[in-house]
Amino acid sequence: MSNPPKLYKILRSKKSLLKFQRKVKRELLLIKLKKPPIRVCGIDTSYKDEKAVTCCVIFSDKSQRLEEVTFHVSFKLKDYIPTYFSLRELEPSLKALKKAKVKPDLIFINACGINHPITGLASHIGYLTKIPTIGVTKETLVGKVGEEIRCNQKVKAFRLLHENLQVGWKIEREGHRPIYVSPGDYITLPETLNLSLKFLNNSFPFPLSNAHTLSKHYLKLI
Image 1 (cartoon, rainbow, N blue to C red):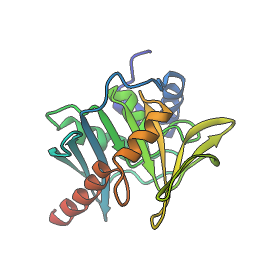
Image 2 (image 1 turned 60 degrees about the vertical axis):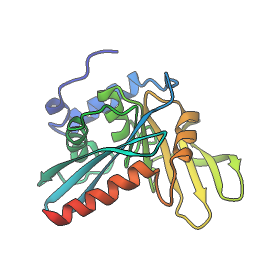
Image 3 (image 1 turned 45 degrees about the vertical axis):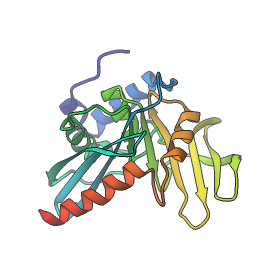
């Protein structure tokens, strides 16, 4: 794997980000975790007018104890451009994560991974930090629902397929909106599903739900 480019070079323009997206796609490592994650992180960003708060929360897997919370406040973020989400949220997500004193073993982020025309924000976070990363969204940018692989009274999971390759999973639960989970980097498709289900609560995996709630709360205070 070659050295990653500097962040300012990645985010200069759509053209520079597109080049980075392609680089990440060539160098993705969808490999098995070396060990079960002990510290699990959620990252999410909330917006109001020209202000944005990115929250990073880190939980202990065994006790589900909250170990650390960090925030990064941004002003006048770039406009959202479909498939170029990293232009808007890559830098604040990395800054919130960098403020944490403990390093997580797994990251959940509200963004696409490989269920993207090239590669999404979850893949970029994983690639730059070398931390296994899972993208969780309410919609998917690419992919059609395929074979059902898990079914019980409460949960159904379906393969998400794009151009004859699997790019993630659709998870359906009775009484809840479906979600899509996709590997970002340094994690396999089966692990992406199993860990997403393990940490799932009423909406998203609970580290991500907590990041969402806390970012919205902090936004009201500034």
